[in-house]
Length: 128
Image 1 (cartoon, rainbow, N blue to C red):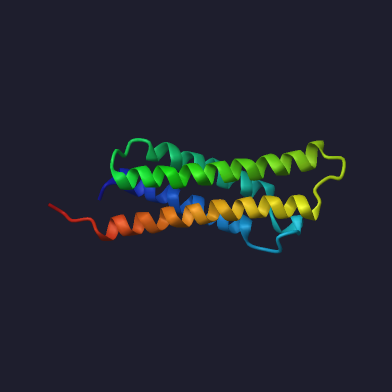
Image 2 (cartoon, rainbow, N blue to C red):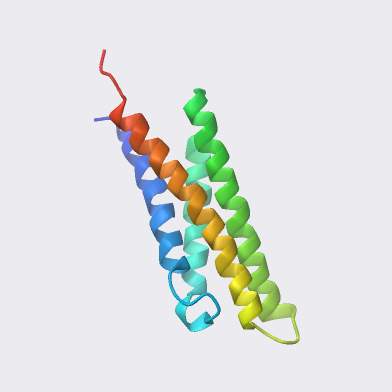
């Protein structure tokens, strides 16, 4: 068993599941979306991205691309949340929350592509 692949797979799957946990629920209801879960999804996604930097294969490049997309979406979601709660006079409205959840949904899609790539890569691996 390759410990590096286990750690890589762990962070890819954890990023997807944390993102899913934040995403699920009424899109405009802030009570159903925890900021700490969004933050955890962002941190784990960033860790998964760092782990993908060493792979020089074509599938590694696609893994990195999906991870960068997820990171960008989650950073944007976090910025919208912070802006709405700390700067905006209206506070966290349903419009702001819908934007945050939508951005998280985009990151979730990128995470799912990464998980599919990981599973495909694992299934097609041939021992020499």
